[in-house]
Image (cartoon, rainbow, N blue to C red):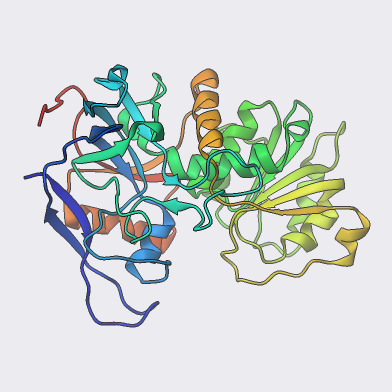
Length: 362
């Protein structure tokens, strides 16, 4: 029987418990209607998967395959599905309930992400996935299966923050985009999207090594946010023709408005997709007087997912992969979770489940 990995229940309070991984045998899937069956080649972790194991994520469920990111090959199609999908290498849209409204999900239940919850009882950490054909995009040809698996959720989140929220007018040659906390999957995809759009990208990190790696990926420069007046150092790095930041893409919160008010042009944008420093953040009068816009941003619509994949295909953009482990090996996958706990990764953590070219007919 096919195998999948989920979590098992043990006693413990949210935030203190750490649910163990479980290797499960699952029924062989059969496509119904517009469904297709995908043989998963690779699946990737997100920080939410750690939160699920700690019971800090809404709707945490047991026995549901984990992970939202996946790539693979379509090996069977349902009676109402387009036969063109058969044999295609694909990436999976990581959630449902959000078609194309730029304001947010149309579904009253909100955006329902794949993996490990009762709200969307499916996931990519398994050998085969049955999913509606409408949730697929062909994998960009220049990406390996591992790279393709690294783009869905972090790519979608970064795309909405960078393109939808910062705006095309800020993504041109000569514009300065600041991406904070470089090293995580979303921040690195934000760097790649802004760079590929022609903007100058600047970064912050608490690690000089991560700043150097970001420069190697196309960032113009970076500063260490552990320095009390890092914003002054960043301003000194900016080119003479544009000595202000046009937009900030941030996942930390904290003092980003205070620092942003000193860095941003009048009317500049802060697109914030996370608040890892804490759940509250001051909005200062200094930012009001400069007409700075603070925009919350999370995940993205089905349309934005397609736009993101098309952009990656046309620009030959690539995600950064930090580490890959082979197969549904619980010990190896647990090690990837330890990387997330320590924050030691630079890019995505990926499980290669099967090699392309060895497709099963079930």
